[in-house]
Length: 216
Image (cartoon, rainbow, N blue to C red; front, side, top):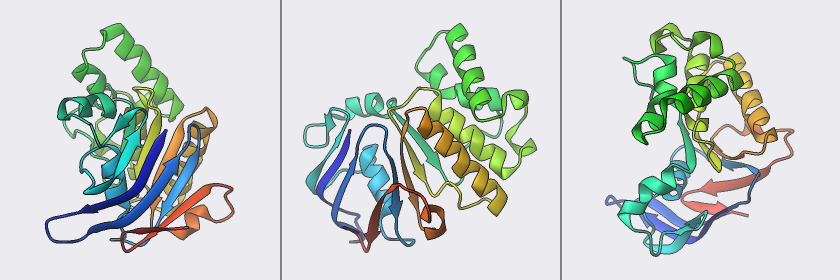
């Protein structure tokens, strides 16, 4: 489903990825582990084609960076659910409106939007807060809204970038537990984190990255 093969990708300042190999199969839960600045976010950006490799290739569910056209990028991203550390919620919109945003952009039917949004809000335990504003929620609840927004398009994979970084330990545990439940229903997950504690005792595939290189 996802393959990064012998990828090199550099930013104008010279930093970037020296040599990266990553595979994620359908239904897998994979941790991408490495210290801050190792290149974890760059790997995710390559997957949703925010950056392109200078060499090697990225293949995502039939799309390939070698022949990817710019107009195809939105089509690819509709198949991905992307979650960030800082939530990226729209502060002037309700929980319901935040989750519905991508469906409105793609001109989904209103009755379908309501059904899908309420379903994913129930899945993340926030059905009762659909009319709340982001500032009325805790950090953990805001991250749950972000997860619901990522899920609403029924993506082939969730890409999670340090999503527990701004949370207290209890909220962190809740979010990891939620991801486990989502994965159990069949959604693949690639989670980037610098926190080795999160992978201890878990029977998950782990890919380590240091100084722009994946380590077997």
